[in-house]
Image 1 (cartoon, helix red, strand yellow):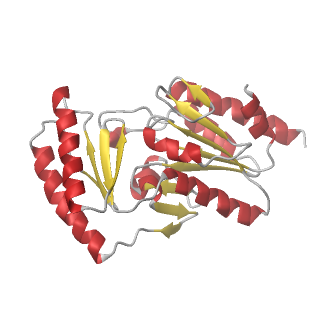
Image 2 (cartoon, one colour):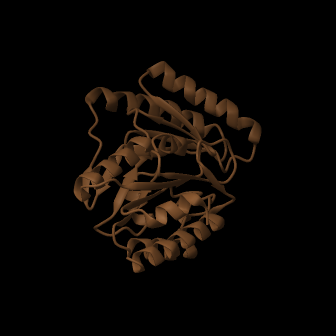
Image 3 (cartoon, one colour):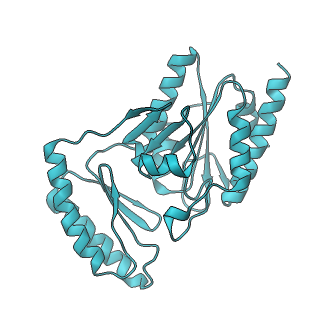
Length: 260
């Protein structure tokens, strides 16, 4: 086990914050069929059962979808829509759009619907404060870049959108909030509740997870799942390898708790 995991195993208080797709659940063509792997789910359950240990999910998925896919109970810590939506033990901090934001979203929706209709396999994904254009099912690869550029141009022409390019998706949001903001909020909440510092493990596979890696502090650990440039201190090959890392952390933290 790495030095970073050894430290987290013995930390007095630990937040394990996890991206969903591509981190604990394999990437699939139909996002509605995505599920946490059995090994990752077992490791998460072990971690949640330990004292002063919390598991949160931080995702680009809308909050209601994230809650359903993670089978989260009333004590769940969830950050959806890249930090825009937050649910803290059932208390919802929902996005409240202004009239101007809603008007800009409506204009962009019309533009994006026309663009995706012209590209077989593309579709429009509706989010609380914006839209996504997934391209995983687009078989004509040469159509993806022009579609994404046209979508960018449409958003830029309307103005006021934050654009994020992820794996096989481009997303537009009228709120400039990131996964890093979500992780920071979760840590601040737990520090206030517990009266002491909270170490953080954050794991993710996508470009948008770099915002979360960027807010990690000394004593925290970032884990990149898969390939790509990253600021994370550690990397694992895939979802199964990350499940193994979670299992190792759970076992080490169980041993640390038993020794105190």
